Image 1 (cartoon, rainbow, N blue to C red):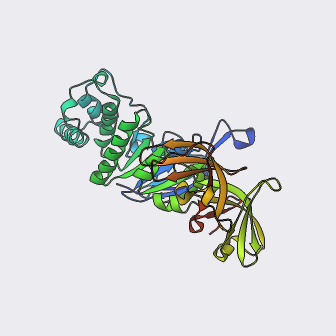
Image 2: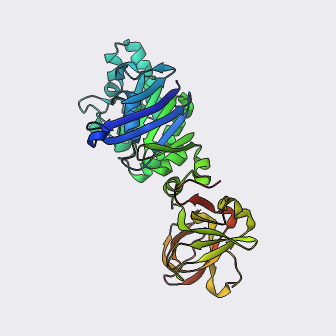
Image 3: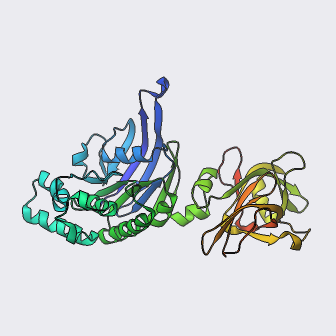
Length: 378
């Protein structure tokens, strides 16, 4: 087990930035505690895999410092960093048995046969591979092959485990099962693990903390629910959560003793909602401010248009554009004229396309973001 520290890490591909090189990682700082399960999540091209490969030593660092267990490893070869990496592809030797695949790295390190036997047996037992040790990869399912790849990493007993989207080749059911297996594995080994994924569901369910990246920068690092409930900016709000947070651009302004949010739209085509004076913090020092209003799909409710109270302060006339039953929940997509919304209804009630409804907003669940910077307004 070990602490991993990244300080002001920079990485550019294909020449210098002045010559049009791709600036993949832009001065990031990240601390991964001893024994922590850290998940780095973000869209394709955000720099997360490059960051992981720099920790492993598979990519060089242009500037900045990487430390593992307090030791600077920028110039240390990958084989001497005491890390073990699991890739998206299984990379198993087809002519070797499961046992031989898992033991191969240990033999290269010239460990004794008894120690190799012990480590492989222990890892196989924890991953449910006991009965498969004599099989070759072609006789295994995708999930079993992935477990062998995990076992090959475990037997090395490294200071740090690195995972680069290891579950992306599995079907949905197997992904769920393997997420649980990895979580159990982390608990049993109490090892430092850094896991890269583009799947925010994996990030939310697996990580002790999650690190959200975009365009080579770290945007937020915190516990999963803290990131979900208090996103640091518009990107995190829209990326973390399924379905993503509803985001609407508009203006906050003083309206007597209360605050009014007016959607940015053509004159007369948008909507406005009146909020309590508790939202005055979002105005800052001015009487008007351009903002993005954000609210989670589960924090919205749908009422019947026929029951609409014309004095309702936070109700918006809307029309159902689509309904997706998922079993116990239903995703209802609405249009309020110039804005689209998605609502999670905790029921299997059918909503018909074209139904006129009232979209009801819970004021205490609203998030505000500065329109210019995208940062959350606290």
